[in-house]
Length: 192
Length: 192
Image 1 (cartoon, helix red, strand yellow):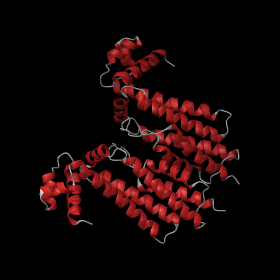
Image 2 (cartoon, chains in turn cyan, brown):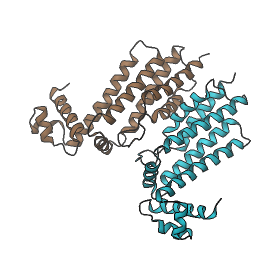
Image 3 (cartoon, chains in turn orange, yellow):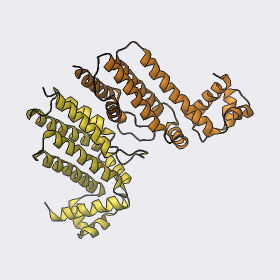
Image 4 (cartoon, chains in turn purple, cyan):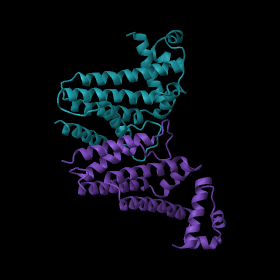
């Protein structure tokens, strides 16, 4: 991976999270990354372009984490459970971990309106893969993994509220696990 | 039921929905209801008191609709399905049907912060009753109706977002039914 590009992305991410997208200038990002402003513009044509690249890195990390779980030795049910937990913790960190989480989310949705749907599609895709692994191993059963993955996505959607919402009752990890474990028990009990 | 009280509540509800709570005066409500302002104050000591009474009427309607479904001839699964659909439509109407839905929801949460939790508890309670009916009729089965009702509540929570959230993708009735029908199929398939 290109080292300068990486340094720019890291600097941009920190600035965006801490001060917000609007208040961050390309000059500040170049300064933090230790590159000339002219160099920065060779890599990214403007702030929106940088923001899109940061978002893509976030999605790439989602994929890396999921593939790591897929490659592990755990039973399929355990994999699905760990994946749901990882996504929950990542979403919670995005929602509450940065000073400018709400502004950053708004800006990402402006440059990438389909972002939330994309994440939902990715999660459904991985749910299907975990389910198929479970079926192959004789550990879980459903006659329609795609439908069940969609049902699970809706059933967990409450636990992924996004940073724009004012939450009187933020979702809890233990409640997420109650739902995930219930689904896993249901699929396990269907194994003849 | 006291006719004057009813007229006052109807007038207040219309004003709150159309103009919002803050912009509505006790004088206007009295005028719409055709009672003297002094009479209005005999029934409700201030606007918040009126707002609480409107909220209680909303909850009473929820209960009436649920009891009507419970008293019907439909199989237990059908009852649960109809109940979930009724609640979804009521929530959607509250969210989108009134000009001042967001302000009204904020004001209700101010005078009754536990309101959303109360509704969740009521829904869980009715889910348990429908499940028990289904178990008695040999139509559905679970060894723990309370746990399953809680799981269903979380699984449907996404479909009841409240009026305060800016929703890029509002929940759809067909997706709600996908989830509800999946749960009903699961409980039906557990009948030995």
